[in-house]
Image 1 (cartoon, one colour):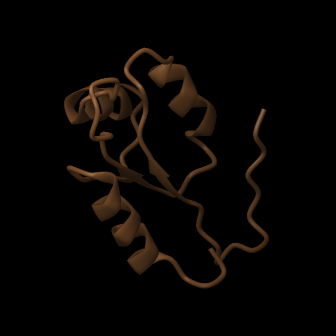
Image 2 (cartoon, rainbow, N blue to C red):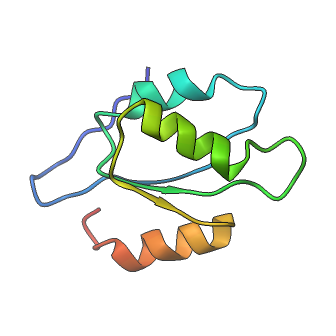
Image 3 (spheres, rainbow, N blue to C red):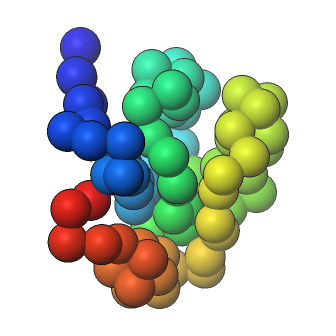
Length: 88
């Protein structure tokens, strides 16, 4: 299991993510739920990608509220990069 640890209280863990629709989306994000401070979510631009609606539904079902949704990964990445501090 992946261990994400902050070195100080000032650090945030930002996650840019997408998922293939045939993967275990719910459990994948549930495993990271408590470790990530801010999520940046977008679908991939291919037919195997989970749709933005599927991803939103997953985050809502997991009661994850600190989520920013985008229509493509480049926008999600750019938003995360803008928000990030050098210690994140």
